[in-house]
Length: 317
Image (cartoon, rainbow, N blue to C red; front, side):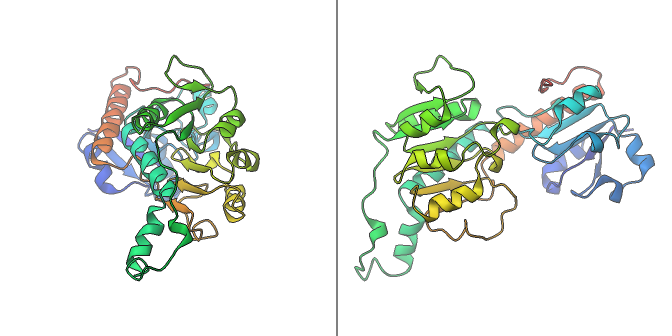
């Protein structure tokens, strides 16, 4: 009999196909588990698969008295109460670095699209204004990448790949992180100091209570009227209301966003701004990264059911 795994978050069935070959999946479809399965069915669950951003606290864990492993699909695990899991002797695993390259690629794409005003330029052609030689103040020359100061907030796997890509564009790279590393980039002791220095702030920090709205009105003001912010981390890191104000009154020049405080993000004041380039949290959404993440999930689940430590375990706090 195949080991049972509860699918706690909502995932496309195509992404679960490899797991279904190895395990018996109980899929909640993103609904509350008790609305889909009986108390008896849930009481026997020993492992679950979830999206790292899905809230999973002590109360939810108590619904599964035999739960021994929570495996996150992807790198993030900000929705998991690690203290509650540790108290209940529940191992938590994820897929570290599995999607770092494509997320770094999206960061670069958003930066280039925003700073070079690609969407505005696209509309300039489609509208016929270019063919009609209609002047547009939005089509004035913009600074290029050589010599541009790129500040990276967070120097983990993704941050390092962003830094390498920016360096290849002949840009100056600086960073702020909890730790200073032996890297060929300028280190700044605070996020404020980094924002004062750079013209593009790349957010690649892990989400958590300590980073909630850390990119606030003050940090955005420090970027200045020619500054940009790009977020491929988690929407919670930016104070979205402050961002709308900063963009509306031109405190900063623009933003490139792949993540939002609330997802999926419905049209609102933010989406109405022409100085913003938006993507629907697709940073790690490539064929190769999904295979890599699934490999980590399979390794974690298989190890758990075999009674061995998770190879990609998250250390409890």
